[in-house]
Length: 232
View 1 (cartoon, helix red, strand yellow):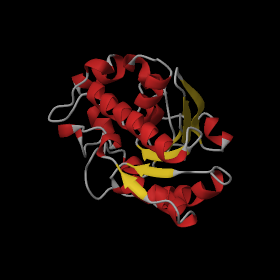
View 2 (cartoon, rainbow, N blue to C red; view 1 turned 135 degrees about the horizontal axis):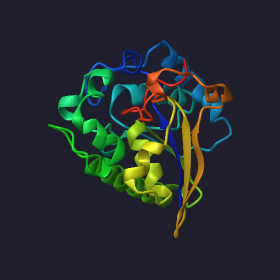
View 3 (cartoon, rainbow, N blue to C red; view 1 turned 30 degrees about the vertical axis):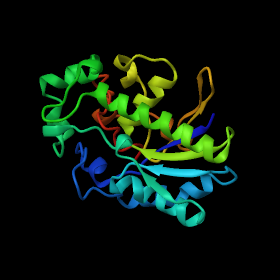
View 4 (cartoon, rainbow, N blue to C red; view 1 turned 90 degrees about the vertical axis):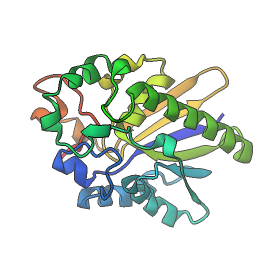
């Protein structure tokens, strides 16, 4: 079956502001995110990409635009099912403020039970994203053959949930996964099982250096909901 290249969108204005964006309109790539997107075609040079799919949100479409410009044969398709989690009343709020909400402990420790007020559950987010990938695997394989590779641009929590599904990890453990902005995660699907080929690859080992501060949960052990801003 197809090989899926998952790209998290580049760093956004919400990431640098420490805001949980969700589906809030007007969130776009910042200067660093734009540079990250511009480097993506070079990073994927030599990889034959048969199709490109994106979350409909602006920051994801912006991230794939340089790749599409470099490969005019690709037509971008959008799919709401790989859009960001619907965080409901949490959308647009500061992550520092949300850390004091009682629900945050559930999000961190028992995410399969987390339902965002006025939004959706993390379990529903994972289910729709997994359904989308299964559908696109079949469509891409039918159109381009079982060795086809395609790219999909989505969001931190969605990608983490897809990785958890691929490696048979319960959703309650998905907060142990981290993907940087504009990182590449690759999953090869077969008839019997998926294989995780890359996880959160930025091509820069410098982002492994200790960075300190609460943003990455170094003080509390918590994951950054939504994915965080990445290395400085």
